[in-house]
Amino acid sequence: MAIRIKSEAYGQWVGSVQAQRLLALEAGWLRDALSGLHGNHLLYLGIDDNPLFLQRSRCSHPFRMGLPWQPEITCHARMNDDVWPLPDEALDVVVMQHGLDLTARPHQMIREASRVLVSGGYLVITGFSPVSLFGLLRTAMAFSTRMPWVVNSVAAERLRDWLTLLEFRVESITPVAHLWPLKVAPEHISRRMDRVLAGTRWLPANVYVLVARKTVAGVTPIRPRRWQLLDPGFGMAIPAARVPGAAE
Image 1 (cartoon, rainbow, N blue to C red):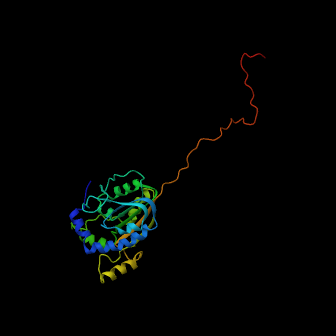
Image 2: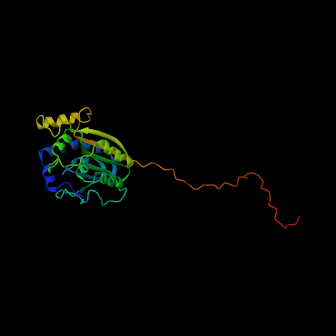
Image 3: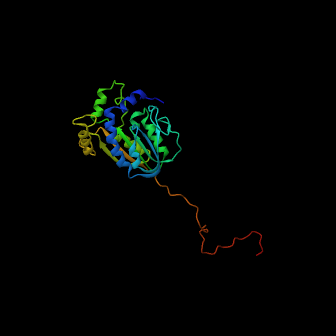
């Protein structure tokens, strides 16, 4: 398992003003996305040290798992990003807040999410868009070893293709954080402008919020016949067979 993110760099960035601004914005969008999802078990994998938006979820048992680059967060347990110690079809909702951006094996992480979700379960993902101002800055900082420039961004349309192959139906892709990481006004005004612009498609967004539902095609089972039909001679007298040697 290759880990591209160093825990020290991760911790420094998550605590920065830039990251906290992003988390504050995403908390509102994730709160709205989760408020309509039902179920028993919700798994959170993300960068927010205090994901209060999970309280808006209607799932009765939300829990958090820590990833290798998160040694200091409070969580229920820790696991590798590409192999999850969870049984098949055990969860109703999986929330990945930039977890996909930080793994070196995003496709495998998606496969694990698909494996543990029940049919009809939901996958909620926030990710950095490579086709954006953030993507341009990341390209310019290609040789940097600092967060967030070392992330492994997956475009929303590419992610849609992956999920379609894994029998998901993408229900929504919302472009958000159009101004972040720029600060064009005082903090409260910058956040308000980003909230107003959420969902705008004519202006490239730096982040997207994707909601997908796992769907498995229904198969009509082949049931045994309730009544055994008779031979084609049904309803007609069947001539008695002549037995050789019988008396005429």
